[in-house]
Each structure stands twice: as structure tokens, then as C-alpha cells.
Length: 313
Image (cartoon, rainbow, N blue to C red):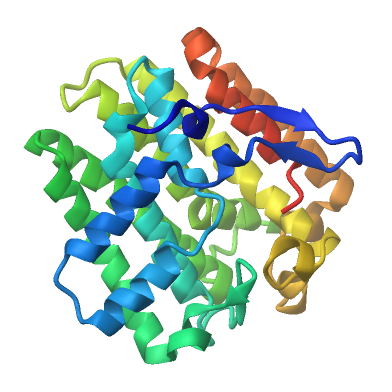
């Protein structure tokens, strides 16, 4: 069982003005962590590969995506436990994406979550293979965990679609290939909605579908959760853009100023800091509006949204 503490949110503005949140929200709940760890321990892998996968998957982080999946299930009146396999799958995809993003051929980072990136720790070849394994394991864990084959197929499709969009966003961000008709703002929005937003939205939809099932009912509820996920996903990356220019590497646990140094499109670069903050507030408002039909069940998602709009790391 996922503890109440692990899936409920409490936000409290700190006296210093630096926002804080109940640590249980942004760290894995006991069941999420143990579920992933136990599954990874039980699959047949070379021990060196298992070690590299565990380093990438179980090495801390906000666990935002699986917790959003759990809260989305609760918003629809279900349990967080129902979302657990899909939540774990989404986190495996996220971990794979970070391992590959950090590689020299892409973002070339040597720091992630305050410690060496996977390729610095294990070498490039093992990092690539660990990322590959985490991707395949994400689909494996879904099929192995859901008894309803139709639901397993539906959840697999959501995770796959989110993954494909994420990779497409990485291509636009790293290699370009935009239509000549798109301006800079349209381009950066396309990047952010796919590279970061797609997997966050998929996490929300996965949690909702774990309650709705494969029967196609409650489409309006799923649409509302999708709207929330899309808004929060884009908002999350705009905040990241601001942190990249306003915070230190020591504070965020990863290298900062890298996007501007690489000449990448960002919201502050295109709109400036103040208009970027305005975009964040507009997305926050729209996300909260999408939750109105869920009443008290949507409280967790609402408080997550409020915190993510003002986070500093």
C-alpha cells in the first residue's frame, strides 16, 4: 500500500520565500520505490547492467511523474495503488531519457541529481545499454503487472505514445528540422510540449486509465486530466528554463546555463523572464480550472500544480 503521506500533498511557503513542500510528495512513496526495485532485482540481466539500471532508476529525483499518476487515479475516485505499474513504467522511461540526454552526443552533462551521470559512472557503452534496457523494461513491467490484458495494452500505448513524442521533442531540441513557417515561440512550445510535456501528460492519463479501465467510459474525466497534464507539463519545462538562467548548479543538482550556452530555444530566451512567468501563471490557472469537476478528489493535483509553478529546483 502507498502510504497516505506519500500520496497527499502539503505546501507551505517558507519564511525565506523559497517554496517548500512536504518531502513525501517529491520523493517516491515506499510502494513506488520498492515496486521498481523488486522488479529490477527479479528480471534476468547481466549484473553489471542491473547495477547501471539501478543507478539510473533508483538514484533519487523528484518522482514527479509516478506521483502525478497516483494523484490522477485518486482524482477519479480510485486508489493510488491501481496506478502503480503504469507509474513505475513512466518513471523507467524518464530514467532512460535522462541517461541518454546526458550522453556526450546529446547534452553532454557530467552531473545529474548531484552526482556523476551514468556515462561518467559506468562508461558510455553501458550507459547507452542501460537506457535501452530501462525502455524495454517499462513495457515489460506493464504486461507483467496488469491482470487485465486490454488495460495493459491501453497503458502500454499511452506510455509508448508519450515516449515517441518525447524523443521527437529531443530531435527538435537538439537537431532542429522545424517547418520554415514556425516562429521561435511556436518552435520552443513544440519542443517543450513534446520533449518534457508529453511524458508528464502520459503519466496523468495512465493514472486516470488505471481507474477508468479499457471500456472507454468517462471520456470527459479523461479529457480533463489530459488538459491538466498538458498544462502542467509545459509549465514544468518553462520553470526549468527559468531555473537554468536563475539558479546555480549547486542548488539545482545539475549544470545550469547550458541551454543558453548551446544556443537552444528557451522561453526566457524568446519571451524574456517576465513574460515567461506570465505564461507559467496562465498555464497554472488553466490546469486548476480543469480539476474543478473532481472536487476534493483533485486536491492533490491542484497542490502539486501550485508548487511546481514556484519551485526553485
